[in-house]
Image 1 (cartoon, rainbow, N blue to C red):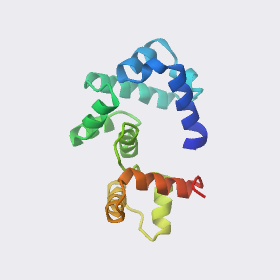
Image 2: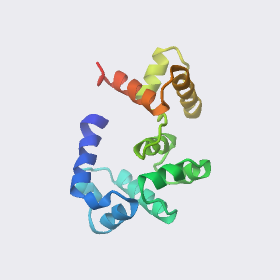
Image 3: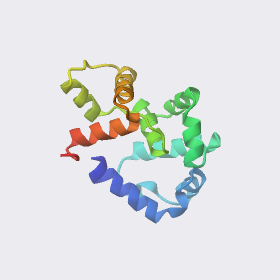
Image 4: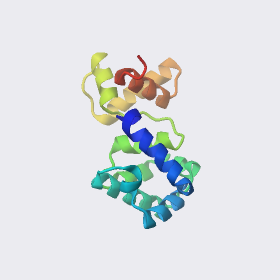
Length: 158
């Protein structure tokens, strides 16, 4: 779904809103433009989450990728993000990857791969820990292992 649907929408948004590469720029655009229309996205709850995340990040002084990567490095800040309706642990980890971090964002593909490897159904944090440990043992970055597994299970690597 990401490669076929979300990625093209994000790329179109980046082209249409080049001044929105920072949180402040994105907030300025949100004040005058309709995100749902700009992304051809009919998901009011997710649009509301994007607005709430933008407000939260603006209030906490994060503006650039580097700012956000550093901010997300603090567990208390990750918990602050989780307080936003619609933001779970996967979203927090995925946001970390988007700003240049290297994290495992457990989704259905990573759960499928783990189940096929004989790993029991574990809570999110425990399964993330399994992938992080595997990345260390294999000499890979956690985000790189996440991406490789995701591509394999989704069929993108076949």
